[in-house]
Length: 177
Image (cartoon, rainbow, N blue to C red; front, side, top):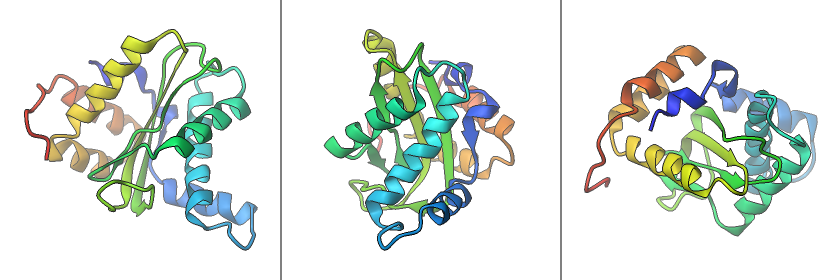
């Protein structure tokens, strides 16, 4: 799966921590830094990256779809990775974005560890197979610690795309522990 084909530099955020700080300052309140508010803020940033493609019907409705999906079960997979994903009428075609949190974000990962790498997937409701293939490809790539390390060390948005291009054809491993 050629993930880099679907990711452009404008769909990459290398400092989610800074973006969250800005968003949470704009919405001060007693529980503005609570775990759920932080999750919603992450999804807001990722939705903005998806909308940057120009292929989103309503950014507000897409965010509502992602939040609704996240309420059902956390999309954090463990080992520092989360893949918020949704099939939505708001997607005009398959969409992918990437966010990195150098400090790590509590996203209810099954291993209890903070999430540093976020991939957000959005596809039209009729695009099941392709959507699932991309999801599987992301999981497979993260079976290799060097992929995560390379993404964490990327200096700019173009380098993130290059990292994905370099690791796109990794074969699956039997044991991804």
